[in-house]
Length: 440
Image (tube, rainbow, N blue to C red; front, side):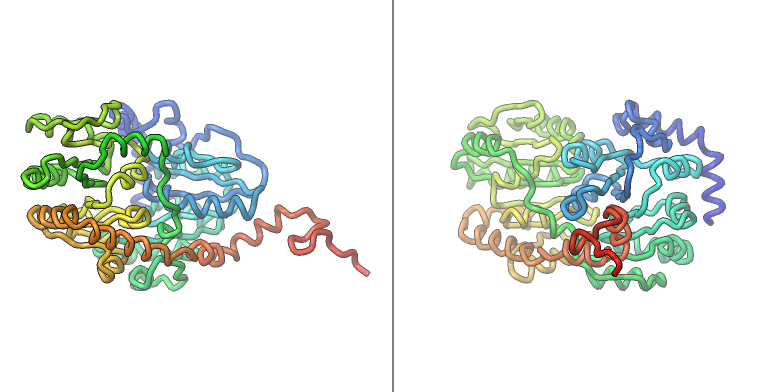
């Protein structure tokens, strides 16, 4: 299978280049940095040890930031390369990375381009985040004897079922990892089903993330514009869920004529499509990306900007988290929980089943099966602020229990970090006591 894959990706160079050009025309590739996708670096490799983190997109990038910041604090001279494959994640990385940490686009998984990438960067350690397995990259890392660790390993129910149909291929890919760090026992069992025994339970790095950032002045201005109006949020929505949010709003306006519904789509570039649909229905809509003001007549506020969920979640207590009333698998429940939200979600929550279960067991989140159930749940929480606040407090308490995840992750990585620490320590010093004693 791998030989066939390697051959196809090798002879398919022209087709891959055409595909990248087509993506660039759609705004899905950065035309100024397109060479990075072919393994051509846009900057020199810095001297000294270098850890390469690979995260697929925005969610994975955000989850790994606390670990990057922890390593920078512990090892100030360490170089950190973070690769992703999307334009939106690149923007996030540029905002969050500092010091000796920097971003590049991951090369497309074609042998020659992968080799060019690795020849330039020569990472001392590779940390892959969650679930993106590229055969050429992984096999070349293994061939070059570069230690490779899967961090925050993730394999959804659908992915697990799909990989089981090609279990030998999956086993060979997973064998490229020297160690797999898993968030829970469910993930550990799934990996062991493929014959992976080098598994360590560290907890979910997403639990280590601090509360989402916010521009305090923006928060003050929007909160003032909203005033005492009843408000609820449909966050990280997918196609189909915005229409459900619109119907919920229509059902509730009889009891809450001043209701404001905030919609924050999972993919901000869908904002114009959502706005068009709402306005076609005669709704009064304000658009975040256009700087539209919130007025007393605004019915819907479409938050179609990147990296502002920290602002949006702070505007209301009642939050529906999308990707869950459509068969997607759900979106991150920890982020609103950390900001003390009363959380509603649909039944399609497999990607966050554990945290959904934990939140549900203490009454901090409620599952709704359809539009009618969502309408009733939002109405109940708007009419009973004390109940919503109790849910929100419970949600915050659940996620606050996982603050030792970073310590456990760094401890598990220590066998791979120790050689890098030693290489950064001058020969006449030791990390423990400064000057090394001369031989007697």
